[in-house]
Image 1: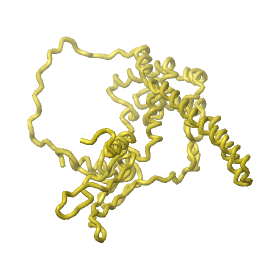
Image 2 (image 1 turned 180 degrees about the horizontal axis):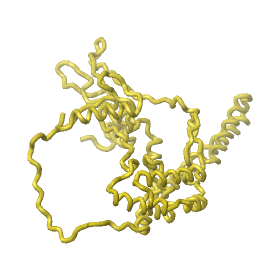
Image 3 (image 1 turned 90 degrees about the horizontal axis):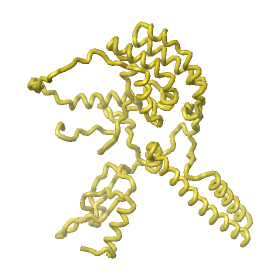
Length: 361
């Protein structure tokens, strides 16, 4: 076994320290009367950057096989200069929101016929109040995205370094070059300081807001876990979410295993000492349930942000308790409660193809 100072050991240790992925798995050097060996390597810092590796015949008299593969490349989105409107619930005027929420007529809500009508009445009031008191932020997608690691001081140092460089290009004197060197060294120092401060601040916030960590991790990766277009049955690629969902649904239905006429499991009868004939829902119970919601999560299909719900819990607890009570009495749920946002997550193989794996294959 090679020691730690052996070049081979240092090479392997470097690969591990850099978290690199080696994509080739078959021998790439074949010579008569010799054991085939894997000499050609493909390294990337992300496992999903290489796909469709093909091992071909050697070129000319070479004893190395030919290798063809696809490398996933990324470009800026087409709509990079389009402004996107986004409600900023973190900067909402919640005192004014609470005052408007008190205008909801709970007696009228309680007397509305049907849980669907009651939920619609409540959510329409909420949406009107949200549009009135939640500010709108415009998110601009640009070809040069904002780097949160670089603060205002660092950006100013970078700008000064560039000005010094352009000045030196126009007049290449020793004084101008020394001035540029000083600005460059100062910018490097301030950038390191800015990055350290950003990471330190991030480490303090991660415990209460884990989304910051995952946002940071995604910003450092080129491949995405989400699924874009996938191949339909006729070989074409889906172009929107509805088509993708239909193809996935058809695929999962095709691999579903029908147990047929197999006997159902036998359940042991349970001894019931008391019957649950009703569920009591108080405003305090609703308030405590709301306070357990994580305000940093994303909203669901109803577009009611958890931040908004948590901040207004002491006001909306009464209308919500009425709605929950009405839902229990009618044994019915509003349609919004049956909706969900489903995001397929890529695991392995090729993102565009549905490949059956496991016992059902």
